[in-house]
Image (tube, rainbow, N blue to C red; front, side, top):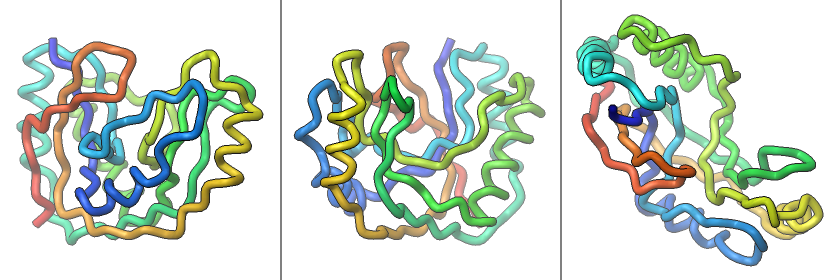
Length: 178
C-alpha cells in the first residue's frame, strides 16, 4: 500500500534559502531541502485502487492559473511538547481554494475526510522528545525569515516510505494547473 499526499513542491532556490536556517536546535531532525513541500492533502497508506482513482481525479482537476505562495515566518507545532519547526505559508484565497479542491478530489476517489484543519506550512525539522520548549522558543526568536515567494504551477502526488516522516519523497505524478 502506498503512503501518499498531494503537495506543492518548493523550488530548489527557495529550498536553499530555507536550509540556511538549519542547525542550532537540540532534538531536531532537519528535513532535506529537496523534500520541502506544502502539503495540500495527506492520504496516508492507501490501497492501489484508491491511488489509481486519486490519480484519475487529479487529472480531471479544473484548470487554474499559477498560485503565488508566500512563506512569511518560522513557527512550531506542539506548544509545550514541540514536534516540528516550520516555515509558515500565508493562507491566500487561491491557496485555500486549491486545498479545498484537493480535499474534494480525494473524497471523490474514496478517501476519508481530513479531520485536521489545513495549516499551510513547509516542515523544516521534526523534533524528538528531547527538544525542550525553551530551546524551540529561543531558536525561533533568534531566527528571522524574511518573506519568501514562489509561484506554484502544479500539484505533485508524492509517495513516502513508512517512517516517522521527513522523506525521502518520490514524485509519483505531476498535475499542471493550466
